[in-house]
Length: 127
Image 1 (cartoon, rainbow, N blue to C red):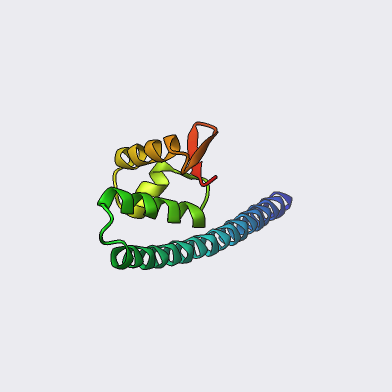
Image 2: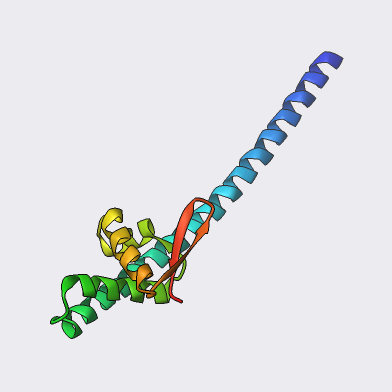
């Protein structure tokens, strides 16, 4: 009888512990889902903003060579979002990272952009 009571008490403690763990896990997952939703909204806003920028560049800058338009697009992106890596910029404008690096090197040598290292990442910004 005493053994059965201890066994049931142990089971109840284990169940209570597991319920608390599940509640904590659910709360954590809920917070993560809220953050993911927020990030998705931000990405959608940036995509919309990028489309607007692209449409303005196409209308206003047609005589400008493609490379110059791309550099202007990079400048516009860095105005709105300083401290981006070449990979970040490449994802936004749809070019390869290598091609974006070529533009950034030219722009950095001309003094149009500057860069700094954060860990191993090289981040670009406007002076």
